[in-house]
Image (tube, rainbow, N blue to C red; front, side, top):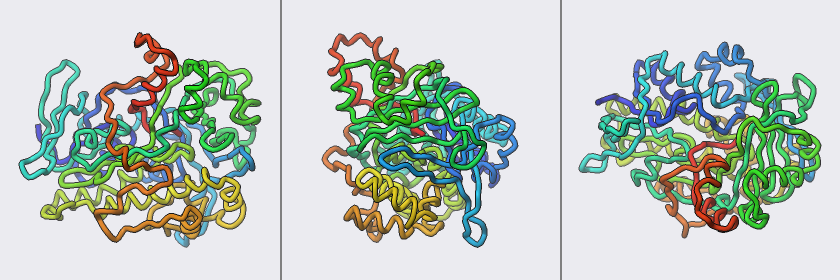
Length: 475
């Protein structure tokens, strides 16, 4: 089987890439192993993610789906603050805007259907093996169908939109996969009813805003509405905290939620689960060399920092849009003789995620200073960042990001192609590069507890925290 472009993964990034390719007259194959709809985390959109959906002509479908409207992010912590969703007009002035919260099972299915309606071919199957030419160019993959049969799909370009499964990294087509100290965190989340919301229809107190609850460094929770009744409720702590409690994930989730913040405790006094507790350990990683001859990794397929400010879905959508002109040029013959035909795109995306990482790191290292910057000195610049405007074409790095780097005693050097994609964040451990590439996924408390290993809870927790899963970005 042959195609110009093969997309691994039919989630929002892969589906958006397919729709954008269709606008260029290119009809790709999407290889997706799961039947949609399926549960997925990552329900909150930045302002720029919402803007991209409007550019794709999907606003009508979003409104018909009655997704909750997000007007901003409200943070409760040692000090509390609010960042609104806002857009920039043609003169780069801030204007009021809104975006959406989504139930990913419905949203992802809608996106995949739309990609198919616009010309993409969707194949149910699993990418099992990368296929390279003798000189190291990726020329496709071997897919495994649900019935166990296999077939090679040959492509000029492969877009890896496999999320946390990081297919090409695990196949060692890319450079090494690094993990950082965020991997010492573990996230618990579920869909629940009964969470108390705010009461307004817009602004800071809008009932469908994202709420973040901060306890102390690396201890936090979130509340993200997914419809008029159900909320995505999450909890993130150091793995050591979970291990010390010697509880199942479900019991820990229920007992620790009220400890995160009094405001969260007030809102979750009478909740009802509509979805089992899910767990993601070891979620921080970065893939070096995520673009090369014949391939581009998009979104979580190459990097994930920390879920706290809900950038995962935005990164997947926006990186897909930015990749398409490079794919079109490559298909027309440009860059075929270059060592990395997509090097400019790779650096462009890396710089943007570095900007996010520096912002997140300062939040964790100096939360009081961060809140002062949000309220006063850099409010406009941070409004941009929270809206997902983190790319160099959007006046980044801003004065805020440059100040964050100064306070973190951090420098970024993009002059040397062999060096710029090496992680330098404050929680990066180079000695632990490429240590994990899981073969299996554990998605729910029940699956974990039913494995029957006979280990003590703390031993089982440590084992579980050494693996990961392809649920995608939190928030």
